Structure formats: C-alpha cells, structure tokens
Amino acid sequence: MKKILDVISQEMEEAFEKAGYEKSLGKVTLSNRPDLCEYQCNGAMAGAKLYHKAPLMIANDVASCLTESEVFESVEAVAPGFLNLNIQKSFLKEYLQKMESDRKFGVEMPEEKKTIMIDYGGPNVAKPLHVGHLRSAIIGESIKRIARYKGHEVIGDIHLGDWGLQMGLIITELQERQPQLIYFDDAYEGEYPKEPPFTISELEEIYPTASAKSKEDASYKERAMDATFKLQSGVRGYRALWNHIISVSVTDLKKNYANLNVTFDLWKGESDVHDIIPGMVSYMKDNGYAHISEGALVVDVKEETDTKEIPPCMILKSDGASLYNTTDLATIMERMNTIRPDEIIYVVDKRQSLYFEQVFRCARKTKLVTPETKLTFLGFGTMNGKDGKPFKTREGGVMRLEKLITDINEEMYKKITDNREVEEEEARETAKIVALSAVKYGDLSNQASKDYIFDIDRFTSFEGDTGPYILYTIVRIKSILSKYQNAGGNLAQVALGEAKTPQEKNLMLEITKFNAMIDSAYEETAPHKICAYIYDLCNAFNSFYHETKIMTEEDEEKKAGYIALLILCRDILETSIDLLGFSAPERM
Image (cartoon, rainbow, N blue to C red):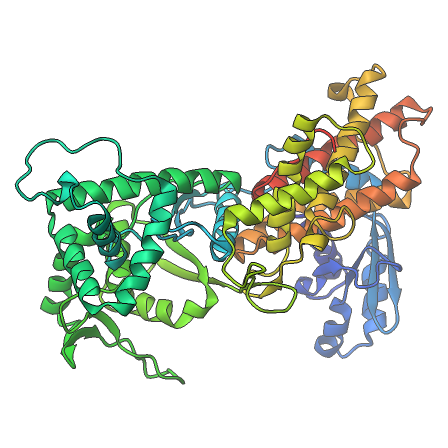
C-alpha cells in the first residue's frame, strides 16, 4: 500500500504536468505550519528558476488544475509561491479503510526478503547482568522486532563471553575451595555428576574473588592461565566444570532477560568458534592477508583515504593467544558458512566504534564476507544518572539489572495503589507491565547513539512523553470499547466515517503516518521514531477524546464511526509498543 505522502504527491505531480511544468516539482511534505494547512508543496519556488517565472504564478497555475481533485479539499497558492493543501475527508476515510483491511496497516513487504543477524546482549557468563547490559538488550530486541515486522528473516544471537581467562579464574578458585572435587582428579574416568557443585549465587561471588586474587598474586594468575589452557585443550574434568558454569549461568540469564521481555534465537558464545580459529589463522596466512609485526600476527586495515590512524587488526598475540578480534572474526566466518546473512548488525557501546571498524575492515579484506554483505555497527550511548555520570548504586557500584527492575516495579506499585483500592495480585502484575514500559520507552525514545539520563521519577510518570502515558492512553481506549460492548454495541459491525471535527481529522491524519514511520524506523535502525510517532498519536487521541462525546453521542452511525476509529488507533498503538518490546494491561 502506498504511503499517504506518495499518493498525495502523485496527485500534485499530475497537476504540475497538466499545468505545463516538470512533474518532479510536485513533491508534497507535511506542513511546517499546521495552523494554516495539513500539507504543503514548495515546487513552484524551485520551478521559478527553471521557467523564469514568478513562483506565485506557477502556484496559481497548478492550483487551478486541482479544483476538481478527489484528493484535495482545498489548494491555496500563497506568496511568495507556496501551495497550502488540505485533503478531502472522503479521501482520508478511504485511505484509513485500506489500512484497516491490511494485515499490517499498509506496511509494504520487501521485494527481496533479507536474512539479518543481530548481535546483541553480549554478557559474560558467571557474572550477574548489570545496568550496562540494559541498552544492548532493549535496543537489539526492538530492532529485531521491527525488521521481522518488515518481512525479513531475523536471527538474534546473544554472543556470550564464555571462553577465556575468566573461566580459568573460576576453575582455579573452585579448586582452592574444594580440591577434593573429582573434576580435578586426572585419573578419574567415570561419569561426572549432573548437578553442579555450586549455585548461581556462589558462582557470582567466586568470579570477583578470583579476579581480585589474580591481580595481587602472580602465581594464582599463572595457575588460572594454566586452567584456561587445560579447558581450551579439552581436559575432561575442566570441560565438565565449564558445562556446569554455562548451564547455571544461562538459566539465570534467561530468567533475567525474560523479565525484560527479551529473547534470543541463538545462545552461542566465543567457545563455539574456538575450534575453527586455527583454520581461519592458516587461511589468513596462506593467502597473504596476515603477517608478523613485533611478534604478533596482524592484518593491515589502513586505507589511503583515512584521515585518522587505524591500527592493524591483531589476530594472535606474540604468545600465540587469541583475542576478542580473533573470536569476532571467527564468529563472522562461522555465520557466513552456516547462515549466510545479508546483514549483521552489532548493537554495542559506541565507544567500541574503532574496534568494530578494524574488525569489519579485516573481515572484508580477508574475504570472510561477500562484497554484498552489510556489516552495521549500531553504537549506543551511556545510561547516566541525574548527575550526568554513568548510572551507579548509592554506594557507587555498578547496579545489578535485577535490582533496577525491582526498584522500578516497586515505584510503579506505589503509584498504582496510591489513593485507590486494587487487589494485591492485580496491582503487582500491572506494576510489572507498566514498569517495563517505563524502562523501555525511557531508553528507546532517545536516539540510540546519544547518552541519556535515567530519571526514575520522570520515566514512571503518567504524564508527558513516557511509557506509562502511552499505556494509560491505550487502556483508556480499551475502556471505551468495553463500555460500548457492555451497552450492546458490536465491535465487529462498526465502520469508519468521515471526520466531523478538526480533532477527529487530526487523529485520522496521525494514523495515516504509520506505514511511512515503520519504513523509516527499519531503514535507519531507529526505534526512537516509533516512540515519537506513538506519542503524537496518543496526544491526537486524547485531544479528540476530550473534545468529543463518544459514548453519549445520540447518532448511532456517528458513534459507530468513532468506535471504528478507536479500534484502529488501539490496534496501531498495540502493534507499535510490541515492536518496542512491551505490552499494555487491560486496565490501570
């Protein structure tokens, strides 16, 4: 289905051509003066240079060709040559009827379906999620949902940090505490226990303890490095312990991500590509891509057009150890061999932009990807406290994600139960739903690349540009529809009518922008565009609601038209918030 601006522009282009001018001058845009008109066309201004004619004369010529238009209600040429446009109520109704009957409200499916991989999450196993993991999860989940809605095949991969010194540290500390464990008996050949020798709480305490010890005790670190080597070499007991660590950690991670309504299609990690690294290294050496520099194996990625220094991409350190670069490149190679994505999007902190520039260049130079493969770095800004510094606990530490979610749930629970009687169970469940909207909308309403202030008081407010305000509007619409049904009305039999008031027409006009907004949010990987759209849509609905007697309207046909408009508005709002990764309760 064509976007409304394209339909209107086509009508205007035909008028320019009919008046004897170049049709490309007929592009229509939203009015920058909505108090004067709904749309505008500035083509006559550009046409003045082409035709050596006063722009107002051109505008008048075009306007005279639109007196019988079925699209425009009014076309006014104003000095110095603008065309102010208002559209026909009948045309607007018909456009909304087409949106209403379309499964995706007029969003066109792609001519060629892409396979897109999104790399987001990126937590390390054996460590609790903290607020630093929030943005990657929230932004990545929304981008995944938007791309799927646009008709593409999208695969989300968590990309776990599960292979490296941190594992050796945990194993070493476990051996210090429980040296009698059979995992450390080289002579043991039987089956290892199915139950892990630790809980998630113990595991989360073991790692920081081991990490601190390794910084103070060189021999302890040496043992941890040796444990890492044994694990990566396939020593049975160490592999069995590692499997326990992964199992316990992933179970806890899934629970925490579920609280954020975030899911992954793949739970792969650095360990999944360990065995293909030697082959990749040989390939890079044999084809002359990699060379030794100061003992390390590197690939030069500098280009002649660079205006700043781009260091070589290191593949192996001088001691032969691999790095993050190595596993990321091997992961790209593995993804290209097994999935062959058209695009891979990395949702990571923007401070890693140079690192990913090196990795992407190296992947292209070494032909790990095809020339057509798109590699996208979506760098996000930091989540800061009210002091403008990275968000911390009151004690100054990094806040656990679980603690942040609990705090916001409690804040919403207080607001929901303040001055009203609500059953405990319902209040708690509603608080969770609304709190999630507060967190996600608070994050996603900002352009991803920008830092933002995490303000719990503002994010949980039911007024202003917030998630709870959006949900409150949806719940208000649901309440009206429920009243209509309880009064004997049939939601399946209502039909859209023509706008009767400026507020109703404005609401209809806001709804028409949905398909263009979705295209823009997808093409620019920009969830904030959905937030901006639904905030405007909610404002338009609330203006209509306050100025219109919906349930007390005596004309049943007019009332049914209002109800049909509310159903469409509700469906588009609920679709939009689902793309942002949250939902609305039935009541608040």
